[in-house]
Amino acid sequence: MNEVEKIIDNKNWNIDAETKNRLSSLIQKFIPEYSKNLVLLDILQFSSYFVTHVYKLVCEDNGNLISFYAKFAYLPKEFEKRQRERIKYEYDCTVSIYNVFESKEKFDSVKAVAFYEEESAFVMQEMQGKRLDELLLSSMKPFSSQNKDYLYQTMHSAGEWLKIFQNSMPVLGETVFSKEVLEARVLSYFDKVNALDSSIITTKLKQKLISKCKKAIASFSQEDLVITAKHNDYAPWNLMADDSTIIGFDYADVEYDSSYYDVYHFTRALNSFKLKPIKNAKVIESCKQHFLNGYGLDIPMDHPTRIYFNIFFSLERLQMLLRAKKRNSGFVGKLKTLSQKRHFRLYLSELNRIANL
Image: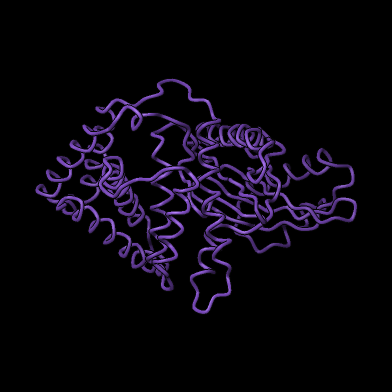
């Protein structure tokens, strides 16, 4: 048994033999390839999701501590081909986006350093700094000494980062949406929610919302229909701040969409912090405004894109919550269900508010 396998075997991890072999194989390839002086000190099980799992590799290089993250695709037999393609796509996106930001001052992106096709995984350098959601949570604590000017600076820079990303990533294919496609997307979410629970949205509420949606789309200008690259989960938890530098990461679902998609996704992600046990609505609203200022956008409350995306995202989140509820099981599942109910009520009340405007 080699040293890598010994470290893994000493961990109290619940991983199958196939995952263990892939992890061991990747590390034994990566260490000598990266540097002849690189020494593995430890492996940490960092995070696990439905489609990927991540391990932190703690190393030493010429006496200096250095860490990496190895991101693996889950490979169930029935989805193995798709999962292998997905992790390679994320690696390619990570490389491309890093190249965009490599020469930018105050803006950066996570750096992918190696891809391993057989193991269906890639390795990234560890990012320095603190996540923006952690900065926000710290600033909202009672008697917090967190510098809010720094928090607002990071939110402003997050808006700038997104603008650079959208302007720098090439769009392949159509560069503008048709209004029919935008309408169809919302209608499809009505169908998805109804298929999961037909009692959630009444016929009367649906009719009102569809009317509001059609009216908003009809008011879109040509500029409102522009397509750009989108992160797809652009939120404070996918950005880090290192002094005055903003660093983006997690590009598993990068694709193309409305230029407003990531903008509204980020502001709505900030709204979700209002559901935290400790919250400060004034700070959250200030974060939203600084973000929009950084992006260079002033959106009135009655702007048609705001109305459209509020309907779109509320329906999307309802659908996600209903799907998640079906996966909940046991005691932990019951706790998740209780937490999800608060979010569920938020999105449903938002739809009712929009319908009655």
